Image (cartoon, rainbow, N blue to C red; front, side, top):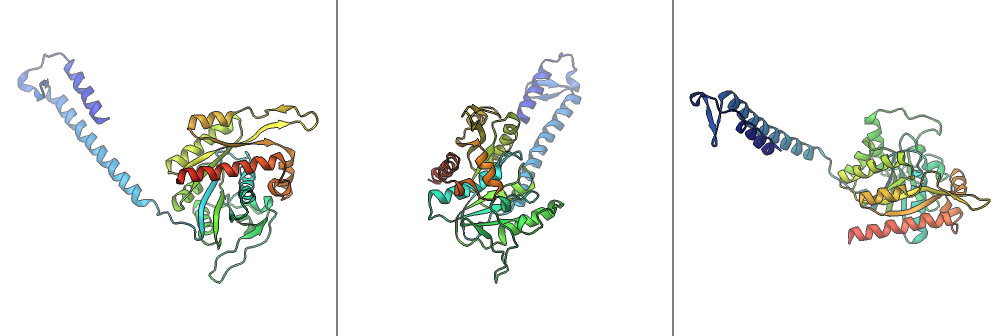
Length: 328
């Protein structure tokens, strides 16, 4: 960029009237420049060189400041489930993804980490209450239901207690949830990320090797805008985006079976095409998903043969395939 501006400035000088006394002119190449212009040009060149030096020092400083990624003990692969916006069904998707992985392959061991410190949903969705016990090494033991070990800030505070913390306290809590939990041996740890692209997302992606990210969005334009920001954030921190899940894609009337695209049709598919990723699957807007989630009996385990459960299991299979493709 500096070279381009330098050439452009030189061209401007070439176009100036040549009515300058040669005794008070200085030479730049074959072009005669007045001292005042020459002085500014030299200053411009020095400034451009200085800017490049500052940028290089900033890059080196940032590289030194980034923490070294350290795997979570006992965990083979970490999958993050994220969304740019809240209320799109991210937590429900994360829970049923974890259960879908196990439903597709009962030999797999899958854990679930609720990283949404301010709005933990996993305790309700997985019907878990109580405080984690401590091991001899002072590590927290996850609470388990449906064969899935779970950890959440919701296990450490009262159900209705607001968590009013500043950034440093949140980062400390995330560090404890990542490093001070005895996960045992897991093939996959599914992380339910908080909405947005803030401190928690950066902390997790910079401290832990992430196998891939799943982006959840409804087809609505306003949700897709934030979903794209979420996908771009993961790309910036070098986390592979496995694909998009289009949640609440269609509503089917239980009376007449008429289908209505309440939040729009195929918005996530268009975004996936723009980003160059695939759509992992579509989840319908269905009463069964809402009722089973509120009851703490996720649809994959409570209605395993339903079309809704099959949709989640299809997404789980697509995630595994994408991980195998990227590792191969």
